[in-house]
Amino acid sequence: MKRLLALLATGASTVGLTVLAGPPAQAATGCAAEYTITNQWEGGFQAGVKITNLGDPVSGWTLGFTLPDAGQKVVQGWNATWSQSGSQVTAGGADWNRTLSTGASADLGFVGSFTGSNPAPTSFTLNGVTCTGSVTHPPTDPPTDPPATGTPTAVNGQLHVCGVHLCNQYDRPVQLRGMSTHGIQWFGPCYNDASLDALAQDWKSDLLRVAMYVQEDGYETDPAGFTARVNSLVDMAEARGMYAVIDFHTLTPGDPNHNLDRAKTFFSSVAARNAHKKNVIYEIANEPNGVSWAAVKSYAEQVIPVIRAADPDAVVIVGTRGWSSLGVSDGSNESEVVNNPVNATNIMYAFHFYAASHKDAYRAAVSRAAAQLPLFVSEFGTVSATGGGAVDRASSVAWLDLLDRLKIGYANWTYSDADEGSAAFKPGTCGGTDYSSSGVLTESGALLKSRISTADDFPTS
Image (cartoon, rainbow, N blue to C red):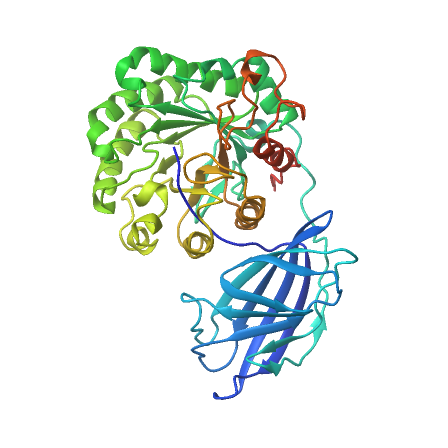
């Protein structure tokens, strides 16, 4: 049900500079820097900085710049050690990006506040030496495809994996944004015609993740009943033009092989029943934990053929080690998956995070992994890894902006009225008919609805 990960952001008004500079003790080093305001709201903003080493390798770096307006402050940063004195800001390399070979880049960013205007810095220093060079202002609104009309499934059709992206029927990368149910054995009343109408029409969600627990009074207690309930929710999502992620929600025990026979039975049934549908994605193991990547990979390579026998075209999401953290929560990293991938095609790898618990190291792993692996954030929360506590808005926004920039799809935990900080609704909401107004939304729910309900960018050419 919980845990996870990953990185930073970029995207709107960009100031690019090409410079020559160098650390005092090293040969002159060239660098390129891009400062990007990726999101802005009343009194706050998020910015990303990308530096690229164009000269000799460096084993340490410190970036400096001046915030032009006295009211601008750095609130929280990532992928560097950030500090501010007056209007002067410095960012020093972190353990994983301190050394930059020739041509290598480091992405860093921060959430800031402002009281007046919010202009971008116009000069930078590298290791104390002023960067010199031209300053350019690329178009802030690059041409895009006209907005597609129709429901997510009507526009995109059958999805597939192309390279490191999820792609639509036009072979163009797409990002799906939506919500996950809580355990359907506990919160069944939350998933009815009224709530799914609201999710599709008011929230404008692209997907519903159906969290079917295997243990904890779930599937193992009534296989036929839970299979039927999952199929019913798939149909309800399809009728509203949303994709449905069928989540085989294994959590305790953490070794998915404990449920291997159950998984084969379940996925054989739902794949055969839903093979003709274009809106189904299969998630075969929620959060493997306490188990090696080799064991998870073995499980996947036995379950995926069962799905493929009935439904050869659907995308399959494979959980990763350390509560689907690409191993980061176990002290590892994405390299174990990169170097030993699942022997199957049309698959993605799950990454889960909880914003108050999982910050820089997790974002760094996602940023690196996204260049080599197709990732899908099939579960994340705005709170701590327990599912409770206060919303960490700054970290949540940093995560969401990063996922938007990388076009990584996501499902938020949870579309429910559970009495915990991660729930979208206040307790008691699921006894009524209102699933959208400010009166029933929690802080987490309001944040996610504001992000999900923005227009999708589904390319069709």
